[in-house]
Image (cartoon, rainbow, N blue to C red; front, side, top):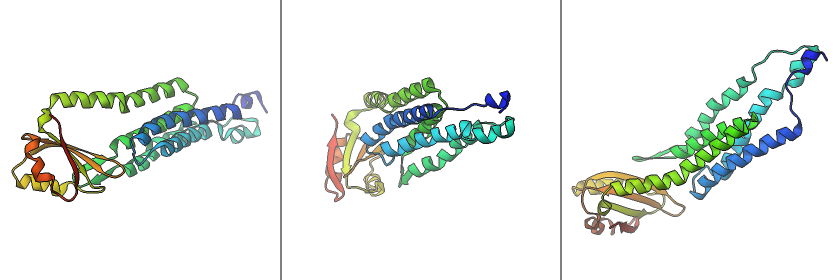
Length: 230
């Protein structure tokens, strides 16, 4: 092998294992938050996406070492070509995580975490550990502390007496409820829908004190519980 061929980049199995396990750990840290939030794409999905992105990066940069140096000459190749397809390919998985039901759209945050976990896995596979660790910390902060802070700021900005929380039966659509409120002349300024294992939690922002609406909605068959904040 010529001196030029000997300079072609290569990596040992220890470094490969470290990078793959780092990708799995960082992807799992983000996935655990999604798992605790009972989202469809949880711990295992995020670990698989991160490890897959890292492996594609490793294969792109080092997997063709023998082919590139065969014959004593180094074949010029762009190691980012395969890794670049991760950005496009992860879009198919992210699109599958987004669900639309009636007027509500769910899964956008989970799709975004899958996208950023692929980037974290790519960085770990490339050995760019600092960026991977910092990105993971930023993502976890955005998913957990920032979410709590945002909800508190939003709650303070709104009139709590006009916010009504309903516990709905699982897979229950909200369109019939919104139509009923509209028929009664009650305007819904905003709403948030959160899915749990055995029920759906719907929070409505109303144009009138929420306790006035309680008698109307509490008798509905698909309403499990009613709560208003004062």
